[in-house]
Image (cartoon, rainbow, N blue to C red):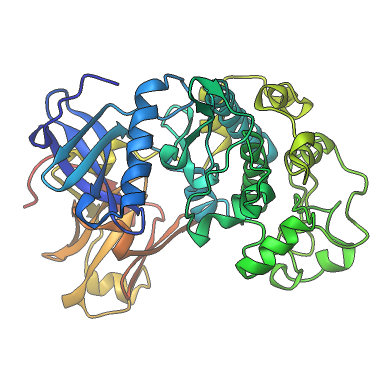
Length: 455
């Protein structure tokens, strides 16, 4: 753990960038005053936590002191501030892998990108398992990526030790009260909750589900009730990568919403067919995002992870040497930022350092509206919106004296932000029911950032 002060006055809280733990946890971007470094702070309302939640938190804090690995998210400091538990971690500028597929890669990431991400996760799992622990919560939202492309595994709250009375147990029988939301990632033996128990290989199954999540753009089994999902898993139903080898041709000709691919379960004569070797999505003449072909190595990797019998699943150490990872030629810090383009990491300077930021150029509101350059869906008096990730800006959009002013943002993004898309030079900004379209064409709108008060 770092030497960051255990004093909330040493941190200047900024924008809310996330929530979790059944809304009992708020994640803030913050500036560490002694050094000026920006960090993420998880603030957990202890008064509202159940005893089980407190136990999970204690377990996480305990292992965070034990674990020291470059692929596991470190805690820089932990302390109590009034009724809140503050956990200080590095700021992850790319967010989580779930964030990436939710906002930018909705049809799934490229195979090479997934290879870099999963290799980082496997290295973290190898270390965790060697230390005698089971992670029990491997999923895309717990995979974080820093600005320099480093992959970190987080989500240690549900971790459990195999060490009992100084001896390493063969299996464990601890079955925490998981939220229904995490059931799709859990292995059949964890869900079964019988005397056979489970071990570290349950994490390998979760990794296989996560691989499908990253490749397909959605989580397998999420289109069915929890009871049906349990029966499917216990009966040996196996999710798969959705591409031209696993989806019948007649379904590929349909619209994605009609193809039956939501479950992520392979059906039909196309499953298990010949597979192309390059792993990059091919062009889709029919407009179906699954008109692509992943490599046979990727399919084999997922099949190994999702074996119904845990005895047949390889260890993390064994999977690191799988042929799927032979395509990795560079360090993730060199490759991931390039593979994730056009997405760029959230720049701290653009995000928050300027006290005032605004746009200059042609900002005659009425003339812009008449020319169709700007479309207001509400009255000018209510022209307030959240502008996020326009070159990584995060700020409040206001109209002042006939010009658009971008002010520093203290808005809770998770509650206020509805939708942001970027398409060939047009940025769509939405805040509540307000929708503003900014066309960046030539000199019509010129962006400038000034570290001074607006006139």
